[in-house]
Image (tube, rainbow, N blue to C red):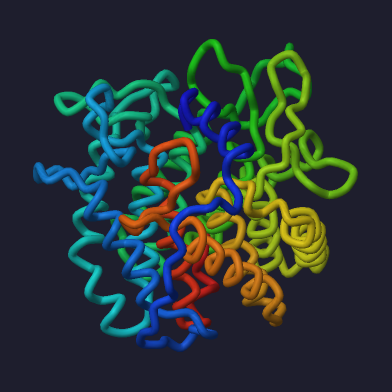
Length: 392
């Protein structure tokens, strides 16, 4: 996540929502085992528009960040939007049957392109993904721990899907980076926590740099049996709960170096703790974790969905939020969260899809990350329900 992204998400909180853009008709298409009225065609249409408008036709497998492009734009997207396009292809590939299998070559290409952000070292001495592509295509820039965690979770999802040993090794390497990001500065308020970035002028410790790390740790423990992964996951989990979970059960965004808490409620910061608790319940069989997952899901649904705030959240935050809620619903049954996800997808398709087939909001250009998020949402709604256990 870059400094540019901070300003963008603040802007999104103002400009996202139901806008008077082009209204498109829902496409009717082949249905899969998890369909519940959605169509494959929507996922395919979002993805086709993404490739048409953002793919860079130079053999790198990379994407542009904005459409239409402007002369001052960098040639390639920053890592966070790219990772969400990567995950969109992973989610498409996991659709049941021939529809999913057709995306295997494209997924292989984007997985290879992900490596263009990978640096063999960083300020902690650990390898990791930088915010921009490395030389000779770019100049690398800073490292953000949350950016790396999303890729780590994608590597784990791919390993669980394909039993691929390379992706598991990649995830373990990323987790070593995350471990190195734990703050040991005792002078800070609430010492501990994984920092948001390696930038020296930023001491923020965020829900989004700690809870996805916990999610990675529990998954790696369940795959490998290595207890140290669970111990670290619990360290990240307990620090975040003690520092950033508010009395109403929702999670604040981050703790600043000066001890002040940024209390803005973002949807992905509510979804990931739900997923962490579900995985902790699976890993330990302690019922308090499943109870916590239920509570966070319920209070966040009330705040975001019932409270009509969900459309004012950035689409990638909502994709992460809803996918973690589906992980819970896979365990407890019901359709409340799936139906909320479906309704959100419907609104985006009918109201925020422009004539080029991209997600669009008034007053700004279309962004890779927003359309990638809708590919994820529509693709996962097509999955075989049994595969929902593999989310995050």
